Image (cartoon, one colour):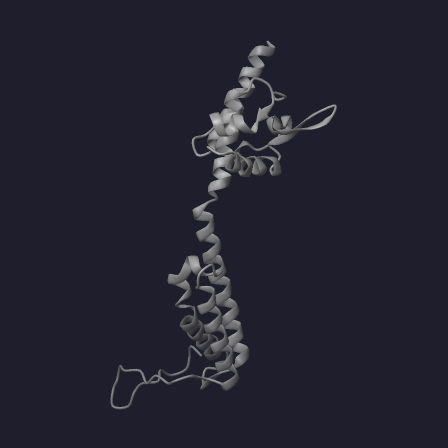
Length: 215
């Protein structure tokens, strides 16, 4: 293909004679299906709503990618087959999905951030790992972003599911709305980078306080 002569327009020496490559009928049907799926996904609560500026160009970019693939395989191609069009759709789906993933990573999870902040607050206020933490302690004296029992329950549920807090128990069973710190998160074998700076600093400070009292 690289050795093929340039298609120069007649009566010129430097103007290309560009040809039109059209979609075959079944390829056109598949492209319309892809176009409609993208339009739907860009709607409210759709999978591509967060990357509209990129996604709204996906249908036309699919045609460009398909044309390149078709001509690569068949330099004198005049039509794009459904098989090639489908390959271009898969490529475009990969890039739109990556755009969504990167956007979501950049946004972060505010509840998870608040859960880390709350756990750091807990470590700064307890003296030992078996000290109980009550729900009202968190929403009455904890981070300012938590000022209701309902919000506190959401954050505590995250801390429990991630293994930071354990349900407090007595001989009679669970103690309602009361938890203790899971001592295993103080293990030196856990990579501190997973906690974030604020929580890691609070854990290190707690270790030092506990060590000083033991001495």
